[in-house]
Image 1 (cartoon, rainbow, N blue to C red):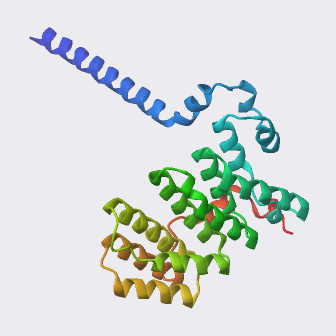
Image 2: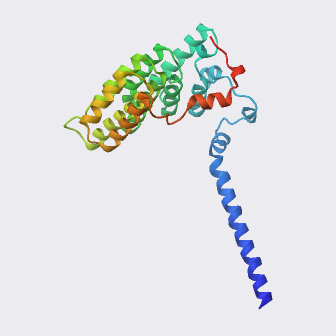
Length: 257
């Protein structure tokens, strides 16, 4: 009997060990999705692990959608880190064009996300144009472009962006049309409501309050309530980007214009 118990314990430990190994393997795969995406790309190159390709060169020479999207993500606002106005002009022009005219969804989305990092009024114009240019995609992708544009407009924190977002959040679904169309409009309104939380401005708060008083959609009302608290300064942002930046970049490493 004692021998049988020992064998049972050994069998149990082996099973648990196998299950643990399987779980660890599964977690390793799920955590490395980005790695495998890059490795299986048809233009995979080992040296990319050691040095990032120049985004300008990639955009000029590559037709690979993944590479172009990554290059557009890598472009940021030079005006925040240097006094090279010409660099900022070039980057803005590239991103503005890509946000409205790139044929691949990932590339447009990347350009729109990067434009949100700019504190330049011209970025607002580019994002507004990208919002209206979304019609070149199928409706399900077009609404994703529009919601991303609304999010990036909020991140610019520019007054012109706030005016556009106020109009979006106040737009009510039309009385006619498919339920899908109405839901897409509601998705854009929710994105605009969330984006307005970035503006500590009485006009933004008033617009949100009017929507809260007149709308019955639960998802929209919840987003509006959160944004009113954010805009009023009574609630912390969903993601504290400043804290993340302070953690990554020591104070002495930051450059000012």
